[in-house]
Image (cartoon, rainbow, N blue to C red):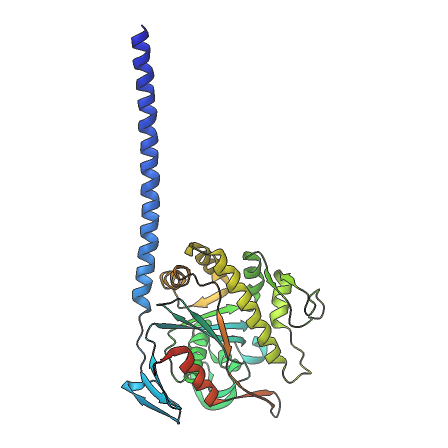
Length: 344
């Protein structure tokens, strides 16, 4: 009897062990499948993101070789970094659509230039009042070219996609035709949601914002409507108000990116979750696979912050509105600094 009971107990233990091993095997298989799926997604994105620089423009005081891939300027030689991927980031305000057309104005325009080899990412701020050549349209009918603020370009699209494509093409021309194959436009109403999704954005305000608790130089964490008001408010009595607002937008982006990238150390999924959260408020031709690959470039290289530069120029008062006259020499130097490597 004793022997028989021991055998039963052994049999019971063996049965439990087999079940445990099966459970472990299933979990390992699921984790492996998930990891393989994520890897496949990123590899697909890497393949799709490959882009060629064509029809590169150069400044008058530069000498170009290899179709713009080698530049000589001011006694230095620069080689094009062909690992760069650029995204035109647009923040548009639908509330102004009654004044400017279907799509509203682009109140935030930046280019994210990411080096896929190192993960280094530079945000190039384009002042919204930059005076550029914009084609005017009514529907699909072309009326001609006119010089106006770049923020108005977005309004001439007859839907969100064409507005993005049109704005991106103009920004690409401003940056001497550096390839910008992707766009990402966010309705400014989504800023509140995105701030909350990351647990608020911690920063020290550059300005006090009326009708809020936001005070200059007093550290705060921006949630919800306060986050939106911080990056949208303007003092229309001040000629430089749009530049002041751009400075706050840049500060907000830097703080947001730092928090997101720090939280995402070793986990691309954190950034992908934010990308998916913003989907309801955004228009983009950047797919999940492309975004996952770019996010992996940042995470795998330990990037925790963005480098931000703004195009230089002079703000002037036009006949009716503020006009920002770009310093073309400084803009071209920014292009060389971001997209090229000085080799001499």
